[in-house]
Amino acid sequence: MVTAIVHINAEVDRITEVAETIAEIDGVSEVYSITGEYDLLAMVRVPAYEQIAEVVPGRINKVQGVLHTETHIAFRAYSKHDLDAAFSIGFPEAD
Image 1 (cartoon, rainbow, N blue to C red):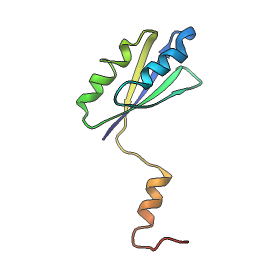
Image 2: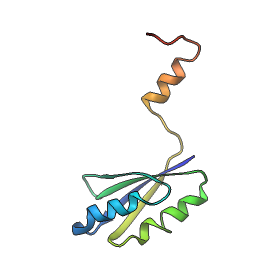
Image 3: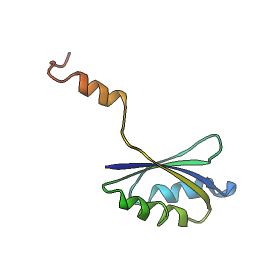
Image 4: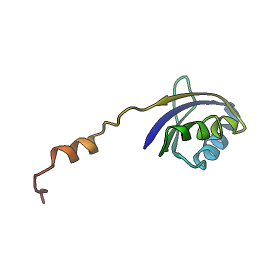
């Protein structure tokens, strides 16, 4: 699975509409409204690297109200959940 983090600037009066539209795009798992330089953050998860091009410039950038995007491709995922699973290998679960 390939994960891309897409920062999005949108027209101020259309942020909610833009977020809802992007959330419906296949390959977009989540959309967050955020603080800072960007208005929205979309998590894109697709099976193949080439599909990022279909989702980001092919779909997200074409949503009415999107002004600019910046995409970052994730190399690895690190999370507490993954670490807990890795450290529990070979140990019985506690009740």
